[in-house]
Image: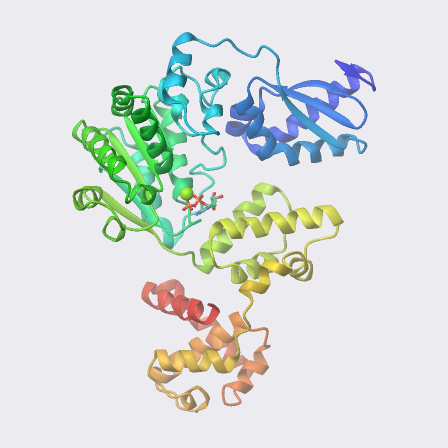
Amino acid sequence: MIDHNGGGETAARWARVRGRLRTECGETVYRSWLRSLTLVRCDGASVVLSVPSRFVRDRVTTQYGDRLRALWAIEDAAIRSVEVTVAQGAAAEAPADRALAAATAGDGDSAEHHEPVELAAPAVFRSNDPTDALSAPLDPRFTFANFVVGKPNELAFAAARRVADSETVPFNPLFLYGGVGLGKTHLMHAIAWNLREKHPQRRMLYMSAEKFMYQFIRALRFKDTVAFKDLFRSVDVLMIDDVQFISGKDSTQEEFFHTFNALVDRNRQVIISADKSPNDLDGLEERLRSRLGWGLVADIHPTTYELRLGILQSKAERLEVSIPSKVLEFLAHKITSNVRELEGALNRIVAHTTLVGRPITIESTQEGLHDLLKSHDRRVTIEEIQRKVASHFNLRITDMHSARRSRSIARPRQIAMYLAKQLTHRSLPEIGRKFGGRDHTTVMHAVKKVDELRAADRHFDEDVDMLRRMLES
Ligand code: ADP
Ligand code: MG
């Protein structure tokens, strides 16, 4: 080890960096990805670490590179870069692995999937099972523990848990569907992590439908379809992500259909995800479409405000940064598209504030997310809200200002006040004035009432949420 500071001191620093990483990332992630990190040298401005394989290196660099740099900088402000390299002579290649790698090699990125050392990487790829080499890597963050459950995803979550915990095959296939960025891939990886831990002997294959297609076309080209079929049909659990990409590709669909049937007939668990329900998937053969709907079909709905807030709170907790709840609420209101964007926004404000070293406030958030918020921040006016709510409940706009108190009018009026509070920056007295000169306590009461009703009545909640979404889009 080359060390400008004397080996002892650097070793102590490295030990502290590792310790912090371990606490930050949790034991599972640490054991899977970070334990094998070895300090090669530290020479003033840069640190070089090594890992046993390219696969681990890529993962560590992309996922934990920033944290590594930040943690080293805490130890020594002069450190500017942290490089992760592959250790020389990391592992030997077994002939069987090489043969399999050749048979199943795919596109550019699959080089990492069959790289020999990857099979020897600890914890993640424990076995020499060929399906492990073919399976796409699992994201260490996508676990059940990290998944926040709310109304929009409770069914999908419960179904995924059941499949992951069950000793038998509870429903076949499990079909998860929903819009982009709502957690389908996360749940599939969570099932996979769970099975790996509890039933390491079960052969599991997880890949995107695109990859499946690619592998199949490749097998056709190399006249190797027998090996392809054998491999796919030998698994205990098959997970195919984003199956909508198979649509329209006839021969692949055909092969997928047969693989699917063969596995289901043998009572092997199949888990599928798509952006639409089996019925709504275009370009899918009828028999495949109907077969896909035979098991349990669970949809993930667009997020609600409560779920978004929950996800932000859980993420902030894990990042170990203190973010005022006002800021989290602000983000949950503003970023309504999907969870991926929500996470992106949070990461950005955390990075932003860490860099400039000021506490996170609504103002700094607005500043840091300027471009992102602009697209979400269509200013809604109170008049617009009144118009939308009135027409939704078949009332006249004047009913929003009137003194009438029958529930059929008062309730929609309360909803409109509530939405005015949520969607505009107007104060309670201002809102009251716009609703026929009511007092601010009336508005406050309306907000409280609607909150209570939303918590108690699912239909009411969905109604209000739909109105909000219409106004925001
Ligand atoms: P999809 O596959 O449906 O497009 P992903 O599973 O890739 O979406 O999810 C996008 C991102 O949002 C991921 O980083 C994932 O961890 C996160 N995410 C989605 N839903 C949740 C949830 N309920 N709790 C925590 N994180 C979530
Ligand atoms: Mg996905």
